[in-house]
Image (tube, rainbow, N blue to C red; front, side):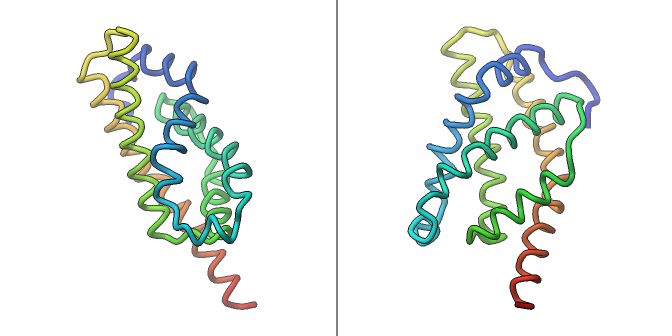
Amino acid sequence: MHEKLISTEITKLLAKEIFRFADFWFDNYYTKNLAREILRQHPDFIAVYRPRIVATVANSLKAVSGGSYSQLDYYNLGKTEAQNGLTVADAIRNRYSFEEATETFLKKRNEESSLGIAKQEIDYYMEELNDFHEMIMPLILQGYTHHYGYAKKR
């Protein structure tokens, strides 16, 4: 990761509009992929989980832009999702929906605001985000595994 710098414009845009992006992903991708059963069993899931989504977006932006990230936070993310009834398949689907939402959001905001972000800059950011996800997915999945292993022992 980080062969070259992430576009300053992309970093500024995502940092400035982190809540707008989190809502965009949550409303247009995340909740649409959730099983209705989970929402019935956990009606407070959306309200409770929304702050974690903003934290996850902030953490990934920081990491992709060259900063550090907490492995424990991603482990706990997986564990929390599993505790709320999500499956490993949901985690994988969420990863790809996050990437799709990020790319769509960047392109949309770039067009609306005439930020002048080149297609190559967005492509590079997406490559870096994908690489970051390759690093953190095992941590997230470990949270699922530990939760399900613990639940089976009960």
